[in-house]
Image 1 (cartoon, rainbow, N blue to C red):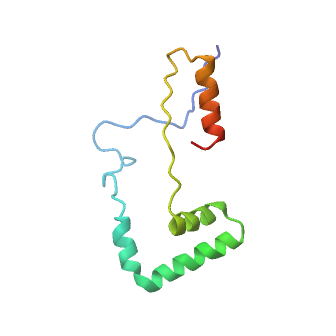
Image 2 (image 1 turned 60 degrees about the vertical axis):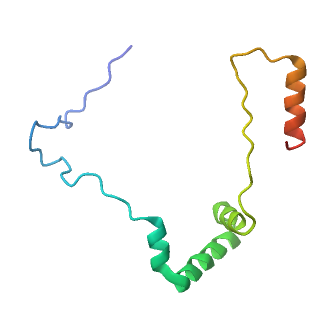
Length: 103
């Protein structure tokens, strides 16, 4: 195997005070609920209008968001299949039939 080329410009951090180190720490992201409440009803109308505009342009994520908000998210069933056990031919057919029938 060949060794990775060393980049001459990379230097390890110095112990103690290094100007490249972030001293502020991780910045907290504002609470989404508070941001939505701050928008108010007029702000929400702008957001919804932007979603409709994006959906009309074919943005699949915007379409999905609008459908999820209107109809509710589709429930997904968790089918626990243990891959460490033997699955019989009959079990495979049952699983495939359930998947085909949307169960």
